[in-house]
Amino acid sequence: NQAELLKTRFGSALAEENKENEIICVPGLRGREPKEISVKNLAYVIQARMEEIIEHVYYEIKSSGYEKKLIGGVVITGGGALLKHLSQAVEYVTGLDCRIGYPNEHLSKYEEMPKAIYDDLKSPMYATSVGLLIKGIQREEERIAEMQRPATTAGKPKPVEKVKSGGLFDKLLAKTKIFIQDDMDVSNEDYLKS
Image (tube, rainbow, N blue to C red):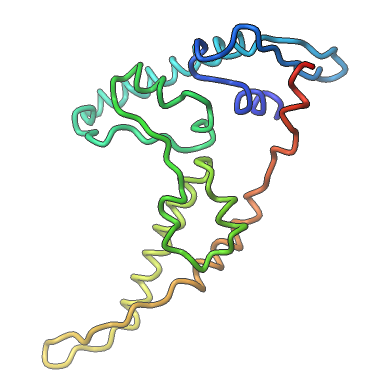
C-alpha cells in the first residue's frame, strides 16, 4: 500500500539523517489532492514509532534474561528491516550490536537454485520464511535418511549415503514462488517533487 511504499522508499528510523529541504509529493487517496511533505518530517513520525517498538522489544529481551547472552547482538529480519537506519536506531536505543539478516547468507550452498528465484529471495523480508524452509528441508532429509537406513548387522550400523535435496528444495521453492512478487512497481520518480 501507499504508506508502506513511503516508509520503505523515503522513510528513516533516524530523522536527523535526512536533508532538511527534501520534499516528496504524496499522491492523493480517494479523490483527495496530492500533498507535499518533507522527508525529514516523515522520518520524525517514523522514528517516534520505531523508538516505541524498539523499547518494547528491548524490555522483553531484558525481562527474558537474554540481554547479557546476546553476544552476537540483534539480527533484524522481515519487511521492517528494509527501513533505512534501523540497525543504527536499535543500537542507539538498546546499546546492543545490530545487523540486518539476509536470507541469501544461508542460500549460497544451493547452487542449483535458479538465479531469478535466488534474486527474489535476497530481501530480509523473506529471511524468516527461507529459514523455516531450510529447517523443514533439513528435517525432511533426516527423516528420509532414517527411513533408508539399512538394518544393522552384528551391532554395527552401515554408513548411509546422503540424500540429495535438490528435488525437495525445488518443489518447496516452486510452491512458495507464488507468494514472492515484486509489489514495488512504482518508481521513486512518482513521489519526488520536480
